[in-house]
Length: 87
Image (cartoon, rainbow, N blue to C red):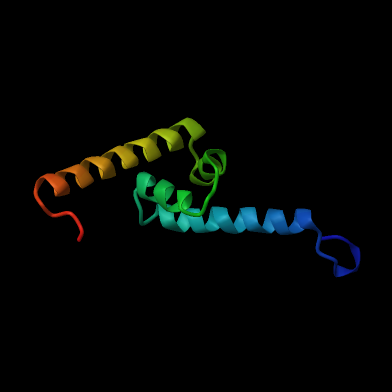
C-alpha cells in the first residue's frame, strides 16, 4: 500500500488478482478444468485472463469454449429433433 494508508488502483488490482487465484485454486480442487473455464467465461473475463487464473494458455481456453458451444448446439438440435424444444 501507499503511505498514509491510501489504497491505490494498483493495490486493488493486485488484491483482486490474488483473490481470483485463490478462488480458482479452490475451484480447481472440485471442478474439471473445462467447467471452471466456462464458469469464468460467464464473468466476461478475457481468454488471457482466464488462462492466467486457470494456469493454461489462451488457446486452450478458446478451444474449451468452442467445444462447449458446439456440444450445446448439438444438444439443442437433438431436442428439436425429438420434439423436446421449449414452448
